Amino acid sequence: MPNFFYELHFYLFGLFAIASALTFVTRKSPVAAALWLVSTMFSLAALYVMMDAHFIGAIQVLVYAGAIMVVFLFVVMLLNLGHPDELSDLRGKWGRLAAGLLGLAILAQVMALSRTRPEASLVQSDFDRLAELRGENAVAAIAKPLFSDHLLAFELTSVLLLVAIVGAVVIGKRRAST
Image (tube, rainbow, N blue to C red; front, side, top):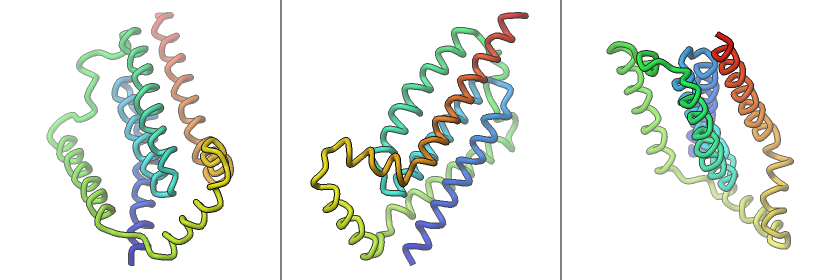
């Protein structure tokens, strides 16, 4: 039964990451787009944690959702790309209601995940993997799964950030030329 909950939440976080990324791309306001990108980064961090890449999940939050988004928002504010009326994507009561329901759904997912325990076979495979990695140094223990098992997710994150940077440059140049 716990496998069902893990699979369900894995797919839910994946769908939320895709929906947040699509919303990020479709926003007119750069500030709102940056906030949707933060939502995407948190969803990807949750996926990393669910794949037992806890360090990568923490780095995802600290480096990408934290430091890089601060830089993006600093550039957006420096270029004065957003008008105060355009900063919110929640126009009217239906947007606020949808945001509240989405927040409650995410909170329910976190609560359900905190109450379930993995099966004994999953825990045993983690212990076997830790025993394997014990002879290696700390960098190899992180780098090996990152560049083998989780390479696709790692590269997709870097491509997403590259697209965001190119989009910021295009918006900035268009704004500067007018």
